[in-house]
Image (tube, rainbow, N blue to C red; front, side, top):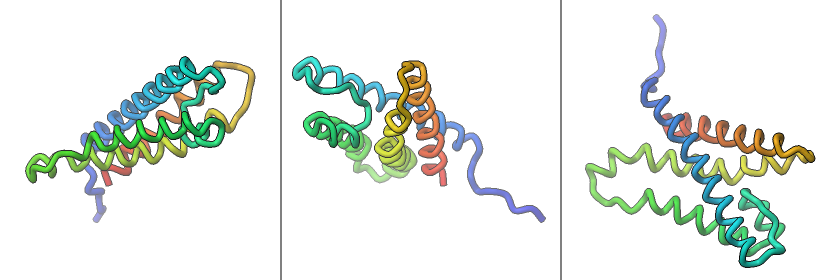
Length: 140
């Protein structure tokens, strides 16, 4: 007799899709925050990785981490018991994707090249990997 997984394939696919989308949204928000900070203080380098920003320009890193914490706090304020049960998967997904974003956003900076296409490809790759890992992690 074959033992099957308890994971619902439809829910898993929705979680993976939502994770990829949320990871891309985090990347866009971090890029916008970096560009805004660069407008106010030009010596900042453009960076979408909060961990790298903490080392290179600590003010930008702190701002990006505060934005990431605010986005995480946005999914946690619900106190109702019924709605809390329904949105448990969303909370788990946001935590998994945010933690994965901190680590995987360093990928474009790990491989240095003069081609912008490689950088953009690595950004797309880490967002897809982050979304898949976050979606699967939230579904388990």
